[in-house]
Image 1 (cartoon, rainbow, N blue to C red):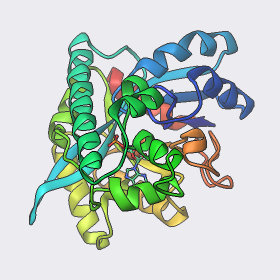
Image 2: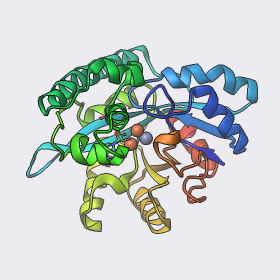
Image 3: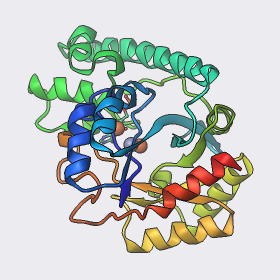
Image 4: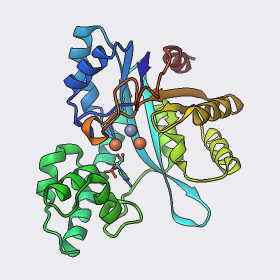
Length: 287
Ligand code: AMP
Ligand code: FE
Ligand code: FE
Ligand code: ZN
């Protein structure tokens, strides 16, 4: 069994890279991919402990992209996973990731100002203390909770941080098409993350979106995910076959930032990703 979607303290998870490796070994996983948001730092830090334990560690990343949709000027936010199971990402790809990190820092500055405008006493420095180089909205949420502006992390999103909430500020994000192209050119396999979150649509609309994505060069779809039930798993496997996509899968483990979810097995054992999923990804890169 494997888990190809996890986060560490290098982005918005609460397990350090070393702790995540220990948890994966305890769960008896054969392979683990670290897919932090916009950074390889967690993967790189975890490499020595993975080697020491014999766990196969896969290099991955999760990017926030925008897909154009009719009637929505800001487009639709789509998370895109990138996997580099055979060779490390190209230097050009790494440089591009640094640009994404800069756009995140710029967004964070504006988000802190916006919250201050709304009368909240919160500074960028306080958030950066929690989230360090990869501070993001989950870290804003944690500070808002510590300061008792909200009772839960979810309330922080609902009241202030969600796309539809009061303090939301736009972030400059690459288009989905660019993300797909950059990952492929960088030597990786692009996979659409948790497709269930593409939105509450009819099955036909969802299928149209996935067809569009496959035309953009998408190579895989995350069929196994802790937010998917058995029906979703089956549906995304079917769509993968129909559009010639590989499937990927993982829990989206974030440690205590997403309570109730275990690495490798998800929520009450609702995730189980077979090893052949990784074999297929490797074939894709080599072909
Ligand atoms: P960022 O990349 O800094 O914009 O933060 C995005 C992360 O915040 C996502 O990966 C989720 O973990 C979390 N997030 C985004 N929207 C919500 C929401 N409405 N409720 C809870 N968590 C959210
Ligand atoms: Fe996250
Ligand atoms: Fe995601
Ligand atoms: Zn994720």
